Length: 441
Image (cartoon, rainbow, N blue to C red):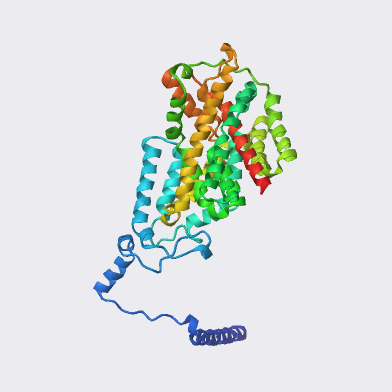
């Protein structure tokens, strides 16, 4: 009985002591002005409806405000948005995104790239939401892997795991076509300089000419971070639009007879050749162009893992799950730069024009080089000039386009494997070109 009384007394004391402490804490909170609760102000039904309308997208588009800031991945870079950017600019970008949706879904133009890019552009132009800001979804994605150049390396790793060096090893002279297509890079370097960009900025812009999105992002991070968004948008836009841009150029530079040229079957390549080549390429990069080794190293890792045959689970993850996940994030991150305040500006328009011309030049240079090589080749070893267009780095998109154009002239003429030779060489060529430019600066 005494134990029960003592326990009851202790319980009462603890309760009283705790209550006094809580009351003391409440007093402290009440005495702190910063934490004082805001008194609710009652509103009429009309005022509630008005408050709701003020927060709608319709009102934001119709009645722009002076205090609206741009959505930036780094908040310190934010600036007030202009009236045009808040109104017609957003509407124009919505239309642009819907056109990209049509190209991706209706025409099937590289939907894996265009669809997430367009959706990212749609999201970032939503008023009031701040999705592209530092704490918004797109801003987080951008800072997570684009601003630091991490996503491009993962993409290169996946591309390496997807790549078969067999066509290039079986017909090594097609590497020349991959090199010729890089004329677009140096052509855009000259063009960007002529349009008023500094030599360093022009070097970052120039990689767009190779239609290599990951490399463009990688070099822009190093040489021109302030142009990263515009460069990424241009590079990936032209990669996705390869089926639109290349065929007219290819047809204009070749005759019907040239497009019907059937190339001989490729020899069977020994496994050891495929196993040693990525290591050989990496070692050459280490000794001559170490600046290019992040990209070439990631590419070599993916390809070496595939060719080794002992880590199938890893190589399968690289070429499927990993590259698919990164493509989603990369597309959304690039799309975040389709905001009206970033896309509808003079510098971005200049870069888009430079990229288009340079990409056309690279495509033309590859086709012309194939025609020149045919002048010095026997009739049995003629090259179909169309495969020269695959020398740009858009792998395997450019090779598929080449095969499709070839089959329009002769349905039995399948050029896909022959086109993969210069296509793979183009990937390595753009990474080497980036290393050259990085080593200069």
